[in-house]
Image (cartoon, rainbow over all chains, first blue to last red):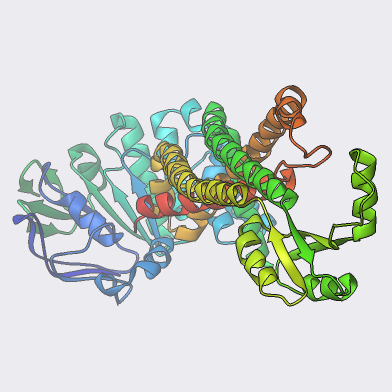
Length: 229
Length: 289
């Protein structure tokens, strides 16, 4: 479902990713770990085409997204659910409207919007918060809204870039367990994180980056700072 | 149906954007109103002065004295076919003589006056050219016209046109810049929102559409307010000043002000197109994929 092939990325001559090769299968759940500056966020930005690699190819669902023209990028992003560290919620819209936004922009019929939004909010256990505004919610709840928004359009791939970066350990564990449940429904979930606790709690596949290179790729792994379990 | 739902979504987004704008809406509209009022005021002034000059020009009369024995109606017909001739009035020599006798104590003489044509033109700049044509005509003995007045009026008209074009161009450029920069501020304040929409896979036009409509709405409201202000100013000037200035001129009863409807339409087109265009241009710079 996700494939990076000989990906090299630099910023003004300074390499951020060097010859990265990676494959995540359909329905798989994987962590991308590494210290700050290892290149995790760069990988994520390449996957949702916020950036293009300097060289190499990036495939999502068999399509080389480095070759997409600008008009096709929104189509790609609709097939991805993206969860961010800072939640990226629209502050002046309610929980319901935040989750419904993309469906309305696609012209989905009103009743269907309502049905899908409520279904997504049920998955993240926020059915009773649909009229709340983001600033009325805790960090964990805001991130769950972000996840509901990411899954509302039924994407085959869910990318989460440091989704627990702003959360306490309990909320962090709830979030990754939620993402695991979503993965069990057939969605490919790829999470970048440097949160040792959540990686080690789940014992899933762990891809480790160090100085822009893949330093390890282990099924049922743990993250011991720079050591792969 | 799906397209309609998307369009209605764009309209709803526009309304929400305006609602969320709060005080910044009024800031933008205030700046636009100032820019459009200055532009519209200068437009009104220039066009009014031009219409006054044109009215003065229409008061210019060429007198053509006819040769004895020629039929004044026949000459008048020929003259009326010349370009730029608005009106030809025949003053028969007998009528002119009677008027002269009534006005002055004139000795009982044989009538020495010729038949005369008084010719009004559609535009003052045609006076000299028409006078030359008249001089060349068979039935006309002599032609008189206020040469100095005609030339001065022409110079004034040319000055007004040149100044009007320069001032209008400068004000249009300034208005465009002010509106563009103001709308840029509004869009910059929504940068995070635009980024989020873009990352969700929302089409660029769905993101830009509400911003463009918002800019157009600013232009519409500003044009309405600016026109109202110009209209109020014009009513005041007409009541207090214009009557005194025009009173001594032979132009009583004439309307000189450039119409308010054309002014409103010019401001509307300028406001809406610059508002919408400025938004489209600015949002295009920020909505990057």
